[in-house]
Length: 261
Image (cartoon, rainbow, N blue to C red; front, side):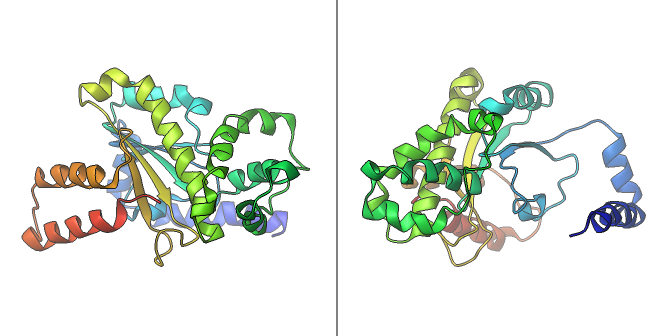
């Protein structure tokens, strides 16, 4: 896209956005902030707020960086939890993360580490490291531990998409672990719930591309216990409309969308 076209998009589309907003929207952006969810996610263009399928203005506090890392923006996360008192923090990774692909290249380029599983992943690691700056290398260094750990267990996954998703899942687990240590008191007092999830953009979990799959709650990684915890939360809420039918749909979605590789 030409630079002039990019500038036109910024000017014209924002103006169109402004003109279709209601007084309710104005109230939402001019009043105090009351987000109920903090989301730590990647900086990739594929991940946008629309995937949550709801109005997010004044509801979700976003923290974004390459690789959805906690340490990179811990001050911003603290601000959301301690100032806005968001009761839920979600680490949202992506099954087809370009940042992790680039890091995989580092390990796949070492012959001594070559296995059949590594060779399968070569098709997915098109992101080159040749253009990396020192700052990129420094920021992504903490992710290498998770990627190297995932390489030891790739043989049990048949498709390259699932192998890359597995690396992303381990990264999310690591970020939730760091949050759990940092917010240990709040989690123990049940003042804060930590959720690890993956945005499925390569069909690793389901044929329905774009689903958010929850893989971790407060560090819990066993599917059965994750389901039990989620069901217990759902039982405590009331349904203003839809009644039993909506509750049944919600329970079914727990079975479909809370799972692990």
